[in-house]
Amino acid sequence: MELFETPKATPAARPQPPLAERVRPSTLEAFVGQEHLLGPGKPLRVLIERDSLPSMIFWGPPGVGKTTLARLIASHTKSDFTQLSAVASGVKDVREVLDRARENFRLRKLTSILFIDEIHRFNKAQQDALLHSVEEGLITLIGATTENPSFEVIPPLLSRCRVYVLEALSARHLEEILDRALSADPVLGSKRITIGDRRLLLLLSGGDARMLLNGLETAVQLAQAGPDGTLLLSGAVIEEAFQRRVAKYDKSGEEHYSIASAFIKSMRGSDPDAAVYWLARMLEGGEDPLFIARRMVILASEDIGNADPYALTLAASGLSAVDAIGMPEARIVLAQVATYLASCPKSNAAYAALGMAQEEVRARPEDPVPLHLRNAPTKLMEELGYGREYRYSHDYRGNFVEQSYLPDRIRDRVFYRPTENGAEKKIRERLLSWWKSRQR
Image (cartoon, rainbow, N blue to C red; front, side, top):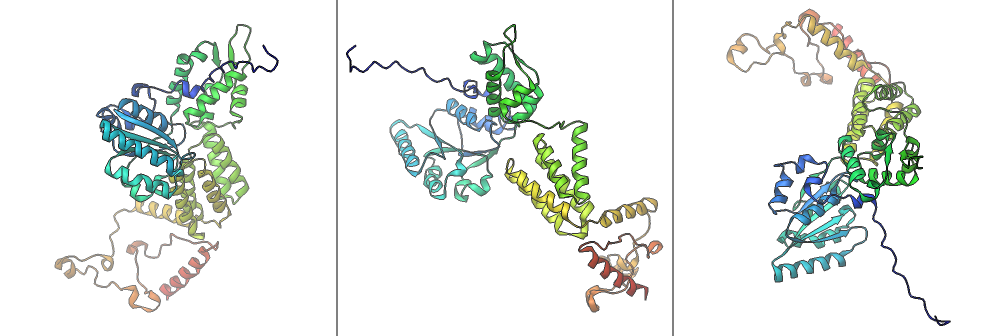
């Protein structure tokens, strides 16, 4: 070789795709999960098999198969398929795809599918650029999003798409994906692998197949081979692979109920620090955020009640928000609601009143409704005195008039005894003044 001669470059080895890409299913039969959409006779399955697809949006958490499903649709239909990422693409890229779609249809009578990953990241101008082509059927749009499309997709475009909700994968689904990866992948299949704690591996995946496979691949790389060459994926190796440790928590066992109980009792006991700690324990253990939100709605009524009527409004709003946005952002909503409820004045007076009233009803369920409270839709009922002596409260000073509303046998019975806590103190004062008026 001459002194200044440039050495010939050796071709670089092609990088090996990650495990999640290597085992991505290539047929609908191999696709795992979303049976409510892809099971035999289910709507999306029928549309794919008939090659009669509308524009659609896949809404669901990460790693549940949105991109895989879009690619399967492309392979099962007679269409030109283009994939764009909303993060890296702009209006110019969209227009180039639309121009090619026009050429496909004009020259080859070929329809086009445009798949946009993370479509919620497209701004209004980018979404507007799609509108006319979707409307006239030039392209079939498939968008994928982890965000609620009602908030992130412009209404004109959303109205022209069907929204399909993809669900988080269950432990059964993840088990199937795990077993297939261990047997079907040529890299893992050539190794002897023993998973010491499958439950931990599934738990750390959080219903996300991509996270499961990435974590599995990293754990295999970290594991040390034993004397017989077997790679043992111990709990410690799995936690190291995911860079995350999981608190002891069994969503279907004793620990589930114990920690949920500690969470509720901490809020009831007005300790926001303990409440947010047990909330963190549940979230780190993989608890369903909707379960947590529903429990707080119950507590807001049972343990706070009229001492702070807004608590129930906030808890119910929190439940709706958690349902709409999902994890991981839902944890922020849960923390706000939990700390507020723990900091509220407390009263179970309404809950206790219902309990006493139910006991009374069970003991004497046959007590008749007083005549003056009865409705009189017929002449006969009027003649029998139904509603005759009823006094309309708004005709009296202060919108209050003394009359009995309970059956005669228990006309003076008191069930609801408001406390002097928070807003209930004013309710107590008001009821006491009305009670004294009745006594007079």
